[in-house]
Length: 76
Image (tube, rainbow, N blue to C red; front, side, top):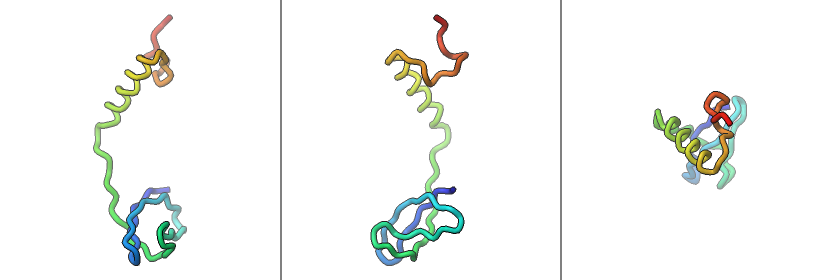
């Protein structure tokens, strides 16, 4: 199921929804089904490595290695 941005034509509300193929979504504010699909912004590439590194540092500070693979865990 893809994530889409929508704008309601009658009230102007902009929102994003996870929509199945045959489902016609309604505006959460006014309930109208007159929606215009918008182009969604994509996430910046290359940020996931920094997020993973930050999570690993935090896990090490807290004393657990749950987000490390078996090869990366320290041997006791």
